[in-house]
Length: 118
Length: 254
Length: 116
Image (cartoon, rainbow over the protein chains, first blue to last red):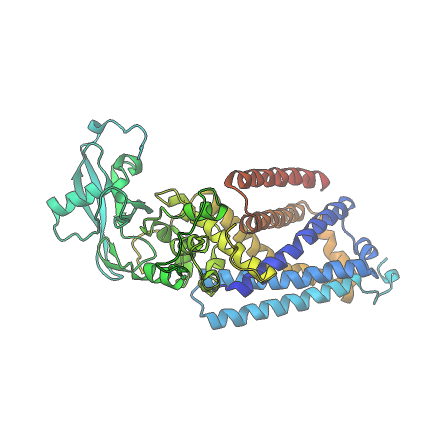
């Protein structure tokens, strides 16, 4: 049920995420070595415009990518009417953008003094 | 077609053959005992049943030598050209299960309605858009021209619909044009004598178009002529993406 | 439509398709939880630390490895697909690419196991 427009969005969001996922995996491997703490994560990310851009673009790309992918899967594997599938997947995209945006702000924004955490 | 070394024929005197009977969406399997014969094909088995057990059995065939593409059926749940599929190759135990092609409406017994399959060839714009008239010179195309090689890789298709029956994407999305029609569209796209490459790219870019393909490769896995529609469909995806990114459609022949 | 025959499956590329689809679904389901836990940093940092304590548990470590593995499978599977679609490669080149991807997944798995 996918047309060329959604296909290009799906592939372009995937291309954007290729370097981001490599970076994400590298950071994970590095970060888990001494155990995870809020102070450690936030010490790395808070107040950093670089991490904000990194995770911000990641969230936007993954929201688009996941919504289009789930739309294809639901349309192929269930009998849900297409109109409903579209509504559902727009909501999934909006939900991921909202939750993801909140998470990015939480870990990169200097809204909270680091002292509170320690 | 080489079928490896056949098992000793004397081991088995007869086959238990389950054949799908019914019309429309209704029906069930009926079991027949069929004598084992040397170099027996699945089409031989079906023919024996019609001639000796039940003359009402309906099936479709024509050439019997793998050229016409009319005898494809599901054999033990896999789509096959039955005239060139030896019993030895597909037999598990002493039982065979023969059914009409998947992903197509059944008319009766082993005969499917091929209209949806061929209608999609038209929808994919898989028809020639001529450039020349009778006064034109011949189109000079060298055998090693890359576009000619792309086109040549798909021209042995016999329209048997084995790939269409094998494809899970067709099963999940009835609008999907399917491997055969898209491969034909790619072949024409690469033909220097075809004028309207843009019409082809437009036709394969809709909700049933080439972009639905998940490259699971069942088409190439089961194609009896060992063609690779999946690669052809990837070519169409590449051509549509290229047109989008660069504004250039069909490449002019070199 | 014809109900007579069961689906046709069980060759390597079909399993690659299934792995890509299942890993995609799993990652999409995990994302809201992931985002929610991280957002705790904004609202309740103590709760985030309370949550991160669980990451020391072996079971959670294994689950983490599973998630990284799913991410890697989806990443490499997706790169394979885009290479197949957009690069005019020959079939042997594609086999080589698939083999190298397999090896890199294997190596990164070992590396990650050492890290945790």
